[in-house]
Image: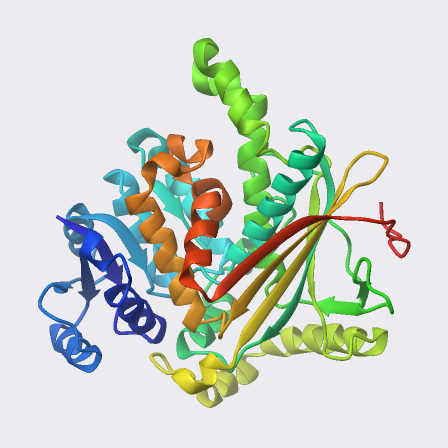
Length: 440
């Protein structure tokens, strides 16, 4: 039995994950194996990274359920880096759900998340499996900054306070896409039935309960408390990140309101006490944006317009073909030197639902490319948290199911990323009155 199985180790991000795990300060506390389709490529990867024989190779074809099941049965936690997940991920989730395993992936595909929720969420709650999609740049920063803002407000105002509007603003530099990301985008546009994509992008599509309506589309949105005023535009990852944040909201809200049915009368009171500080409240709504360098209204509006135009063009088959030829191919991506120059500042502003309004501000800073280099750290630390810190996981993780970074890991992942040295978190109450907010 191996502690962690890494699927897709020979891919671009898979290599980064493998390298990260092998050099981890807690390396003596866990074993890991590499799931590869080709043993020859696996051996070449081991030689290129200087891995010793403590790292095993497991031959797995993710298209064959029998292969996947045999490999998964011999692992405690599975890191799945094989995308696009709509195409390749279902067998892996199925095996983990059937055998009560713990699973993390890098999917930024709401249609895939909806699919595995429909197929395997109930089964996972019965076997105790913990399935956590979107444990990288999609969508850990969004999910965890909201989680921390909620904690900050409840420490200040008490566990019964309810959240209103929550917004995350991104200042980010990415050195470029990988071939895997390009394949995922093309898969969503050409392989996934349009009805599935549309369904998964609806408000609260991944949530067991519906919350307040999300903010509508705007060309430019003012950053709260900015003086002089700064504006932000549409963020390409906004829809997928919002769906994960909304699932965190829904899982906690549903568990709190249905505590008697879920936990029984004897445990209901304890469950309510543990869940109330985690719940966001029925008035919670979420949106996110990206801040252009100038921060002007014009540049934010232009960014939104260009993004909308780009998505429209991607619906045209010849444009997708051109993208497939010009963008990186599977296994390709930016150099280490280029990725070291990347960064992320994700700033969440969350306001209470009731007057007088109180605001929390949470900032997540990442030194290095958040899309790949630090994503390898994010998903690896999620896997290690599930493996090594079971007693510290949130109350919501006890029941298993298809969860989120916030509901499966919570404080555990915050501590682990802070210990990495390349991640910083700050969360505080914002003093003063936000004059520029027009939405309520």
